[in-house]
Length: 187
Length: 147
Length: 112
Image 1 (tube, each protein chain N blue to C red):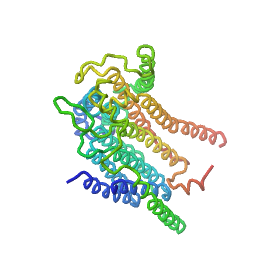
Image 2 (cartoon, each protein chain N blue to C red):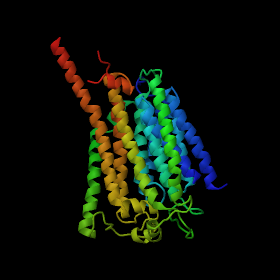
Image 3 (tube, helix red, strand yellow):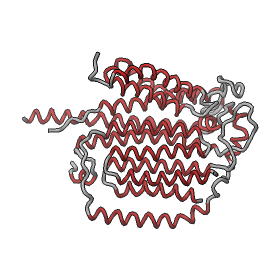
Image 4 (tube, rainbow over the protein chains, first blue to last red):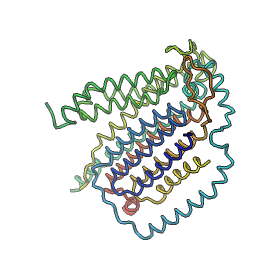
């Protein structure tokens, strides 16, 4: 069975799971459905010959599941019935997105067909990567030698995102304390 | 024995053995990043998951006794700086920013590929510490019901 | 070709969630779906027929390999996505603490 048929099967499962994740009422079911989508991506990476990415995506899935469950479960969460305006907006959005899809079919026809990439720069990396850097893993040689500057920027982004999370969780609790002090003072 | 914090005794006993195996696997993935699939990013997430295993099984108080959280903060910031230091060393020794100035070595040896191995270790520490700390902060965040 | 279009449908499903859902948790999950779709689309462009993963190993004859460049870009992108997801979750939890709801229309009404 060629790779393309496997990928079509996995992608259809992923689309169904993502629609289910968006439409289900229960939060735990939504998070589990997102897990199905992520594991489908990991499986597709294995079929597309990218074992590095399959490992990272699998771990990402576990980690995101832990974060989401730990943060969102147990909150007293109640869903309100969707209003009529909301339904009309959803219908309009579906029509717009369908139009985008129909018009973008011709754009995808311009791309090289599946299984035949252009590979102009990449062929140089494949031919000379082991000789230039001494690393057997050519993906590793690209991210840490040929394009290490990109990785530096990526580390900066990760650092900033994590610092942002720390700051968000810290600063407001301080203001809350001040608020309570203020309300105590007014009492 | 305190049973009210963390999970049951069975989970704690299994965790005591499994956490070292997960940690070892993460370190293996980091150190073999230039030979096999994996590398700093995957290994860092595995290291973070090992610490997270302790946090989930034993609870917050035991983990803050076992690990020095302030030191982990320092390690996270230091590893980001260390990446820059290796890059600047490349200017003075190799002629370009982040140049591969160490010896290339044999193709399939563990000590080879110049600066790729130290950079992998730095990225592994950075990713692992920052992801563990963000879950640490999120788990310690208690919602106080306003009056 | 049909694989690209299916992956594009997945991206549009994520966009639909971001545009129409009123629930902060659903919006975060939709951003996750968008990220998955974009990563998968980049890797789909990189596949070459009858070729293997771009890792050399001892005693294996040279054979055609898939494009390693999008793989290197996506590898970093996945980890950034994890950091941004953590930040969004922190933001949502903070908003829940302040307004006691996850509904964005409700939050807009309670502004201040």
